[in-house]
Image 1 (tube, helix red, strand yellow):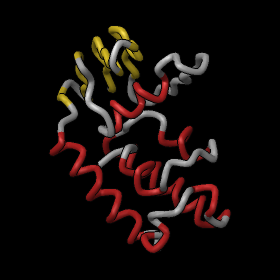
Image 2: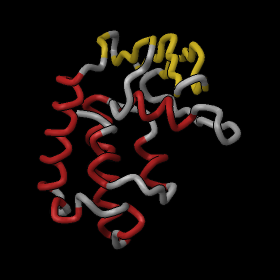
Image 3: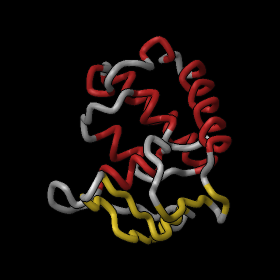
Length: 142
């Protein structure tokens, strides 16, 4: 279960997140929608460890997501990239991969999510976003 509890993030005087809280149960899929500037990307960057919140906490199965947890996810990502023979493409954007390699990434994502899900990996990988492959997979589990 992924929990966002009271996430707040400011950029100077601009409030990007103001006490965002929600829970995503195992096996539940959640869509994140809203207008530009609503805080969607900021929230996901906090979940993935790219940004730190000014206040609040992200927990997975009741435990805070900290640098150690995220490092374990990064290491697991590397192992799956090697196992599925796409490690040499780790710095590439997902949309630049062949269909076969995109499918391998989806297999790795599913495997990582089964171990310790971090929401939105499928959405990130399917949207054609500019998120690099390693970052996307690192955010999906350990």
